[in-house]
Amino acid sequence: MSTHIEVSLGLWQDRPPHEVLDTARVADDWGYRAIWIGEMATWDAFALGTSIGQRLTQADLVLGPLAVAVRDPVMIAMGAASVAALTSRGVSVALGASSPIVVDGWHGRDWRSTATSLAESAVAVRALLDGAKASVAGTVVRTDGYRLRLPPPRSELVIAAFGDRAIRVAAAHADRLVLNLIDPDSVRLMVAKLRVAAHELGRPCPRVAVWVATAIEPGPQALEQLRRAVVGYLAIPGYSDVFRRAGFGDVVDFAQGRPHPADILARIPDELVSVTGLVGDAARVERRIKEYAAAGADDIVIVPSATGEDPAGERTLRLAAAIRDSIT
Image 1 (cartoon, rainbow, N blue to C red):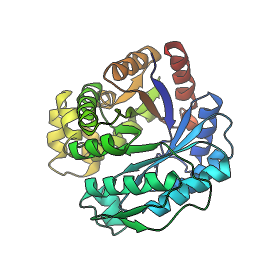
Image 2 (cartoon, helix red, strand yellow):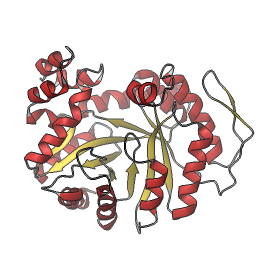
Image 3 (cartoon, rainbow, N blue to C red):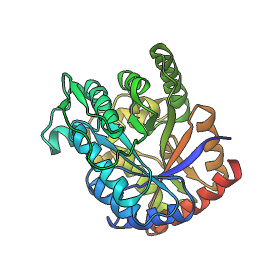
Image 4 (spheres, one colour):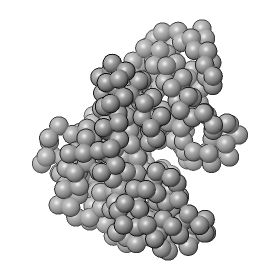
């Protein structure tokens, strides 16, 4: 089995912000090949990446997905080059569309034309990361004349996608596609679309990574944390279809009525989080990893639950490393 297992920091909002430093240390100690550092409500990804990267002995870094409507290509390339120069670690860059709440609500930027913005940003960021001057005069993204002064990191470019247009953007520009909150059957469908698009564009098919919330031998706190994490997704088209196909149509219907989030949470059974997560004992998690791999996932990116029962996700990371070693 050639599937790689990597780690993404959970950035759980019910946990102390600095706990992610411990999670990264544990992941590095257990030999995970890469640590993903996302960006939303807590840490600046480049600052956290630098702090973590200076302490790593084995893992490389994947920064993002970074919202292309919030960060422009020059900012992204400068940030990635800075982290690479200050840490001497390999640094990949992931781009994504984020959400209307983050882009429009928090940052006051235009969230429309996300696929166009993603494609135009990918062209510019790719050129800059390779040390070239980027010249893009797009519909959304415009940049001309800048070249990195730091050594170009020549980063792997990752694109987060879900819809058909974003999948085609990934096929055209990405070294790797990342999918989030998705079950193996949906992975199979997305991979098929990606392969068709890459063939039509005359490009090698990008590798496919899947982010999966993970709690091995979970206690009540972990199940509660994972249930909270899906509340905001149940009413979103695409994500809602995943849970409806898995037999939770009644929960989806309730969420689409836009009740208070606490009322949605009360309706979510523990079993629902297993649809898009690695949840249960080690044997169950191993079977699920193999299902994702059989569906076309090249890389499984575990997002370890961190709770008072499992601080920093240490137990989950330790048990997942044992599974990794037994199947790879």
